[in-house]
Length: 302
Image 1 (tube, rainbow, N blue to C red):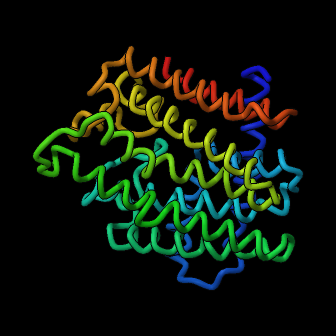
Image 2: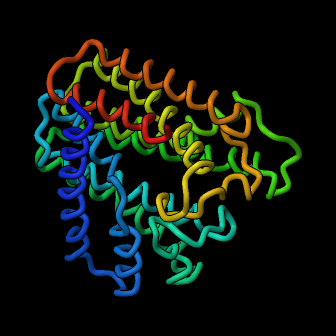
């Protein structure tokens, strides 16, 4: 699959997810200000990569996208919650996200915290709703996997490690490459990986196939984060939709800080090649899409 075909499919997936997100809170009885704040961040744009991965993997194993869509949307709820909280003054203290003022800049810190709390909690309700169309045991297994991956062991734990290695927070030392890889395997990679594995679980994939998907997704998450670190150094605020150079300004340990730009690009390409190799057992258009997406994750940083 060539780059343009992959981008068209990713755009179509994003539009489908966007439409679902725009209306998924319509019938939820909550304070209007909270709903407004949640939708502000949910509908701020983005590639909707994580739900697209979930849908693509589920379809690769014979799942129906309409059955999996609420779960995929729940993953975007979780991703959005993490961004709202990451942007807070106590964390990364960012003013822009996806080209718009961050949530706390519009709604205040207290509402931003509550918005993140609500997004995370509502995510699991969306995921559980898939049990009306899919076997309950598959849905429970996927929810358990997601909860493990985004909690203390995964994404939240990764954020804690990230804070510990940020000079601006008074860290005593810069992290090593191993430290950095562990942080990103938890903080960024865990949600990307669980998006893919949950797609496989919801579609009833075998254990061997689920493990192959996990190997691919783990390497993809690593390649994706390395590319993000590079883009933070070489791109601009208008392109990124968030402040360029913010990692360096905060004293964060990044791949370019440890390895330089060119070595970082080499490592990203290596991880992408490892990811593609893990997809060897599979065939068909959905695999082709995943291969093209893996290449794009790296090539956008060149």
